[in-house]
Structure formats: structure tokens, C-alpha cells
Length: 385
Image (cartoon, rainbow, N blue to C red):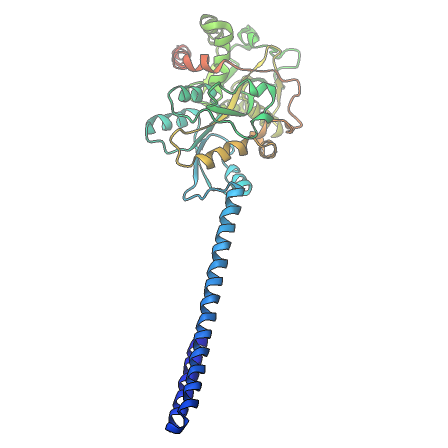
């Protein structure tokens, strides 16, 4: 607009000079020159202003890019896909708040999730898998399905117990562990003195037809529970142990919630029950007491692993680091019944009503992975007889 006004002013001066006649030619020439100079100066000013504006914009863009680089931010065109079996109600919001990234969770029990991963094969639809199925995820690493040789920036905060769980190729990281089975019993049927105190007690006559547990072929925590007996007693010893329980009427239910229902209804009065379910029953007012056997409570270790084919490796890494953050683990523990677990990092407090003298034991991941199919097949056949 400024340029248009200056040109019009120059044109007006020229017209006025021409009307004065030839005798005014020197003055006209001077006026025209002045007008032309004014127009050129105005144009130059505008050009300089435009260049300054462009330079400022360029500096702003560079500053924004530098800030993004310093913050380690990565642009995200689609949500990170995480396959999991717990904490699906709170993880998306927690991760978004902590990092700004979006995550889509796909929920399923252990068998469902592993079947989905197997079906997808070389075309994985997931970026991160986070399950309490360490042997199965170990097997995925052996098949080249997982990102390896990467260490989270906060891995040093793992407790000594959990540092030993990290595999040599760093294919997955533990985010906690819970008892896949504690002894839960109805205290309106048994007293503290008459209730079973060890796993071997499950074979005693006084508990015949009164004991139940989850199916290791279906429930994610149930295989880690079973595999510890086979690992610690060796294969034949494990078979002998469970055969003694089957002979005593051991009942198998698909998953832990069905074991809870059987305990609550009185169908059974003793169970090898996942600790979160056992404490949940107590919290809801059921007549249930818990025993942590001295020989150990087989643990289900929850681990997080990244797909080797993820298209969002930096966001996936941010998710694993987020899971290893003390604030995240504390939020998970404080979230409800699913929060009954041993945190994997320093600076986190377990639930106040959780036993402090727990003895979590677990089968070697490589051994449990190698024998998983064999054990599950044997267990299914033995429980059907």
C-alpha cells in the first residue's frame, strides 16, 4: 500500500510540472528526479523490511528445530502400538502426559497375545510387547523378532534382582514381578494351623478335591508358575509333583478370575492364586488368607520388548524408559488391584498391605522357553486324565 501511494504522488508532481510549459523545464526535471528518488527509496525500504522479516522467520524456524533436537522429540504420524495384558486403562494417558506421544494398546491374555504375534509373523502390527510372559518373549528374541543391543538410559536404576534378569543381548527389560501363585485359602474352612503352608502340602489327603489353579496354556502367569517346579525339580521331578496333585483332585481353570470365582463360591477352598487376585479378594471382603511359602512363590516377570521391525524405534525406546521410571511404576502400583507387584527399579514403594517377606523365585528364561511347548502339552494331557 505504501508503494502505491508513493508512485501516485510522483505521478501527480509530474503532471503539474508539465502544465507549467517549457519555460519551467528545469524545475520539472528536478521535481521528476526527486519523485523518482523517493519511489526508489521507498521500494528499497520495503525490500529491506521483507528481507528482515524472512530472516527473522528463518531464525525462528532454526530455533524451533534446535529446541526440538535438544528435547529429543520425534514427530509421530501414528500411535505407538503396544500389546499388553494389564494396565491398559491407565497406560495411554500416563505415557501421553509424560512424553507427549500417543499410544494404542491392544489387550489380550498371554495365549491370545502370543497367538496374535505368531499369526502376524513377518508383518508385525505391534511396536512394543509388554507381558508377564518372560519365557515366551525370550523365545521371540531367539527368533530375531526383537530389537537387541540397546540399553535404556535409566537401566542402571534396576535393582540387583532385576539386573540379573536382563538377557545378554538386551532384548527385553523387566518392569516388575509378581507372585504367579501364592497359597490362598478360605479362612472359614481352614485355620492358620490347618491351612497348607508349602506346595508339597497340596498333595495331602486333607485337601483332596479342594485345590484349584489357572491353566498354564491360557493364563500368562500360570506357565511361569508351573515352569519353576519343572526347572527346580527337573522334568521328571516336575511331572511327579504335579501328578501327585492331580491324583489329589487338583482342578484347572482357564484363568485366575475363574479360580477366584471358584474360591468365592466354595467350589474349592484352597488355590495357587496370582497375588493380585488373592489380595483383591481380601480387599473385597472375602474370607481369604494368604500364605507365602518359605520355599518360594514362583514369579511371573513382566518384561517389555521392542519389535525389530518397528517404524518408531525412538518412540518405542521412550516407552520402555517410561516403564522403567520410578514415577511410572509407583503410579502403576497405586492404580488398583493390578498394582500388586515387586517394582524393578529403586525408589518405588510396594503396596502397604503386600507382604514384606516375599521370596519370589523364577525359572531360567532360556530353560523355560526351550521346554515351554513340551511342558504345556504334558500338563494339558495330564490334567485331562
